[in-house]
Length: 177
Image 1 (cartoon, rainbow, N blue to C red):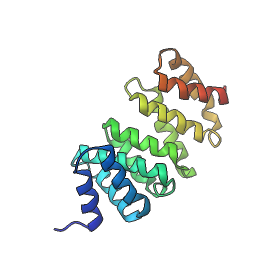
Image 2: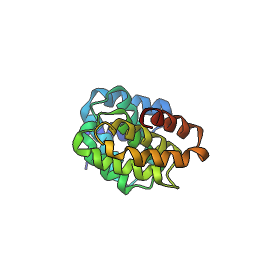
Image 3: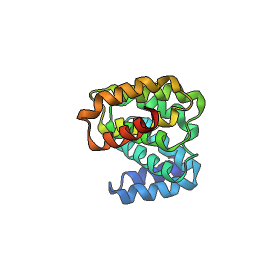
Image 4: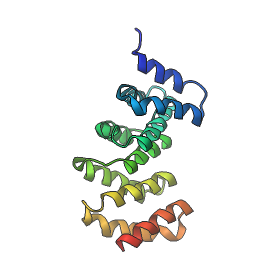
């Protein structure tokens, strides 16, 4: 069965040389074309090829850097994928997208819960935790009741944290503590 044109294009591009240049080329297409972006989301969600799913997620995060609105409609897919994957690169890319976009209010609590759990986790990758701090900071105006819990967790982890974590944690604490 033949694949749709964009799926084939995005699939073919992502299966080419694995480089930032390839990711940026695919992102350049998807920034301007919602069908191409939708196909990237499909590839990420597919799950048959975790490496290809990671490349699609990475491309999606590059798209979100340039087009902050295109990803908003795919919040249900991002939520589903982040809760079902163990792939650190996919988690990192999704949380990075959340850091970049305006998250719709109906998803604030669910995203905050996921990011707070990453923050508390002893096994979450540093980048996922750092992006989670930024996402929580963006949500704090609408979810002020989380402030004390987030401040407590950041202060607890700060003495032993990585440089990237510390920068974001200190930024958060300067605003909310």
